[in-house]
Image (tube, rainbow, N blue to C red; front, side, top):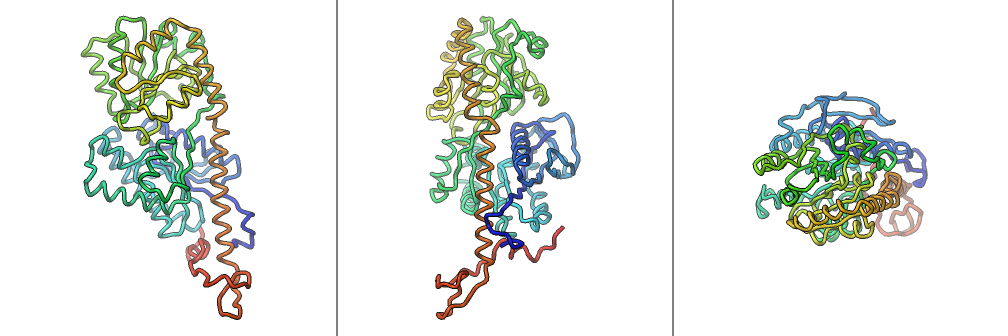
Length: 462
């Protein structure tokens, strides 16, 4: 019992640890910021520990301490090193994780629940350390699964010692976590197969988009479309990370097939495949492509709607390892969606149920090209699919709908922890048999494991 409170009189104190957070406008950071704002408005006491901008940004640095949306945000002072290189990203992630360990000493006395993400991929290990060393409970949001991604990309061998160690640590992290949050049913399947005993801990909670922020603006009324001369062209948009986990090759083959058609392909964003894509387009002499950098957050409602069709892709063998957040923004934009993915992808039943587009096997450039030509010839079909997708988002994937799931999960976790502490701190009465029982009844030999409050009692409050 904390401060004499009944376990039902609990509140949620949450510390979110994530490498990406605005003004870094990587999708992960934007989603976490929106979730934090929602939870804070619903009574969750939150602090965020994050890094300096280094993925998609205009500002090179941000304040080390500030209050945003009723939330205390602390940032590591460590600058990013070679943020666009894979080795630089790995090093930056490691440095941030080490800084986060030091941050644990600051927050340990505050009895927070930790929410850790896979940004960087090994950050969930921090939750394990926090639990073992300080008794802090933690939840994990698994945006992607490592080392599986690295293995599929052939960055590391499946039987390498590091791979085996990482998989072993993953299982330890998952077992100790209060809850595991994944973004798709296929990701849930992967974790359950790797560690069946945590199946009951897994919650599938999708990403979201804000339909009040991203509106289906007509291209004629869209300044972004005018600026880049897209108003009178059938425009196909790929917006987001052009990374190793995404199938860009099928898109390039489709562009080649449609090189003589009045269609414009627009790529917005960055990633490991961006430069090779630009090089390929130039070498093929394709004139129907436009490459733009990541856009400021306030531009996104206009960039996402400056098209007639949105593309989403998941690379070969990446199903269940990643879940593109761009899908939800495309739904909000009210544009049809063409998804390039595996036959068992979680995207397929969603798109079929929503009737908002079509799905294609990896490598099926002929099918994708035919679909684009179909939409070019049928403006009414294009409009119907876009409207259906937006309606589906409004009934399934808004922040209010998804935020309630996070809120319920956090409150349930806080209530469970408070109840466990309440029972652990009840006075032990000795009965005639010499066995202790919190309620004066024989319940066998009671556990001597200290409660969270007792484990943290030795730490001075800040």
